Amino acid sequence: MLKFDVITVFPEYLAPLRLSLLGRAIEDGVLGLDVHDLRDFAHDKHQTVDDAPYGGGPGMVMKPEPWGEALDQLLTPESVLIIPTPSGRPFTQAQAQEYSAMPHLVFACGRYEGIDSRVASHYSSKVRVDEVSLGDYVLAGGEVAVLTIVEAVARLVPGVLGNEVSVQDDSFAQGAMENLVEGPVFTRPPVWRELEVPEILTSGDHAKIAAWRHLQAMQKTAINRPDLADS
Ligand code: ADE
Image 1: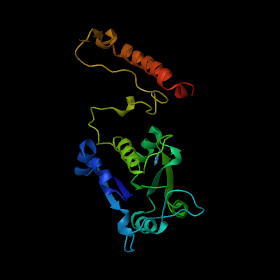
Image 2: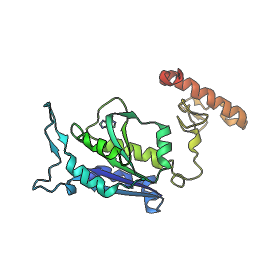
Image 3: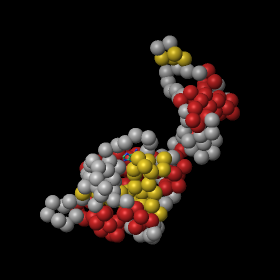
Image 4: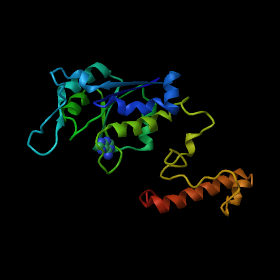
């Protein structure tokens, strides 16, 4: 079973993970999820988790001691520690696939200007530590990134999606969809506001439909993702 542990100063931010698909998987015991409040590991009167940055500058940096205490409790040699940060490596479908086969993912949600860098250095000698970025923009903290990463990973765990859904046809999926986004999709009615469903989709010719979908995916990729089309 894949177990997620999330450490944050805003545990309520992670509540949506208990809804819908993931909520059901957690209830069914297919996935495990625990959310931990970083302040529980800060023992001064005000449960302080941040301080001014060495070297000066604006904002605050998260202190290493509460992180050390929390992570000492949660990490095992099989864990991967994931730190969402705009300075991390870009998160991809291939990485989601890799994480989905792992036993234990621990997420450290930074706020403010981030977590004292010695935390990542210290744990790098004990477990795999991945700094991961969702994209070239800055969020207010790691929580929304964790919602995204956990959802992308969890739906790839066998038993989480109904088996009627295939993840092979997803945009970016390893195999035929690598470096491609999915093309357009249609359902009933056959005509809506004078717009018709492409005739080939109602032809029943599965080989032709597959070839058409591949072409559509390539066209959509060229238009919306020229960066992928060139690769
Ligand atoms: N935290 C703040 N911005 C982020 C981003 N772009 N990706 C991951 N974590 C973040």
